[in-house]
Length: 109
Length: 364
Ligand SMILES: [Zn+2]
Image (tube, rainbow over all chains, first blue to last red):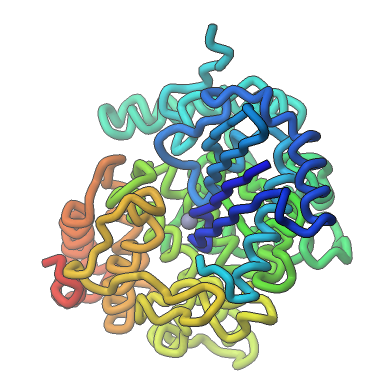
């Protein structure tokens, strides 16, 4: 499974990115990602239902998430308000992974 | 078939459509009445622009709230108004996030009521001030959603708890004041004005509290200009975590100088129109280009005092409109300075000071 993630905006205006492939990630991380993707039921979401309006509300975080798994692919844009609750644990973990990469100097915001 | 439920065609800065599950969350949180608030505020805006007589009617028909502070605990979920943990005048809870948020929102309300601005809560109609703390898990953010503010705990590494900081709370509530006045669209220059005015509220409320504290300690009144000159003009410095200690997110006196490190990179804010950001990121640079206007506010305040600068800016804000760009804001700010000087509400030379400040950032 391939994951492309980006979060941006917010009070601090920080852009985070994370790209991962569960085939090459450490087993523990890969398993957690697979489990969170599954529990988020992301492939059941409708792109248009979670898409935010053109602007605002002020300071919410904006997210872009693309997931490929076998012949399934989903690409979503949403924000803190439009994201369903089921997605939040996955978002939290992806942000943690992105921050960890930055702290290790592998990527920059 | 479209599953969206239309809540309001221009619900403040809120997206035009809200998916059903978001509405469910709102309903669960007991904010069904948001719909009537939306309609009221929409009416309020249209009325303000078009017909001041109708405004009187609105004031007479909408019941006046008590501007109560209400702090809710999201209990590390993403549910709004999950559990009321401290209402107006309730005792301390011993949860620092709750108690800090409560104190900061109280300070903000008291500042708005003070003679500099003279507002009864964000909407000047006594709306309750609702704050959610412990939102999400390790959530590195704070926001205003059109009705309430929401604060994350931070991850404890990059950011600490957002409730700790008065300038964060006052910034988010500042977005509320903007919503009930100019109601800028949240993109490009109007969006940068949204951010600018929110930063102004953030710093001004902080300075107002510093002034009160200093006066209490000294047992006498202290000149505004003294406070203005001692202020750090930093935004977000109180929430920087251990790995970013000493940094800030924005610097109003020197935009572009708030941070420079391996984790966040370099502060991208310009301090002059010649360096304005024109890319698509950050909704067209709403948190970036606000630096230009922030610098002009700082330059004005250090000449005439933060109190007088705030009075001028707020009067301009009341007359601005959703699509206003920087030049139009400058026009209104200069006009406000002139009118207030004529009424002896700010110094005679305020208009010149404002003009000089905008000249320095390339906006006049
Ligand atoms: Zn903001």
